[in-house]
Length: 59
Image (cartoon, rainbow, N blue to C red; front, side, top):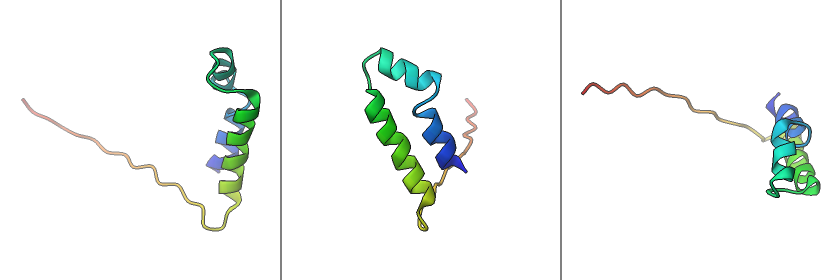
């Protein structure tokens, strides 16, 4: 599941450390982001679409 993975990364990762160190987020804000991901993952109607594609151009 992506929810717990991203939720954990929001609070315990190099991303989280740098976000706090650079003043981009507080630990409380990161906890809020993590909690939101966990709520989304637990919701019956929660879903995530990740679209991928490739563009080939010939010049």
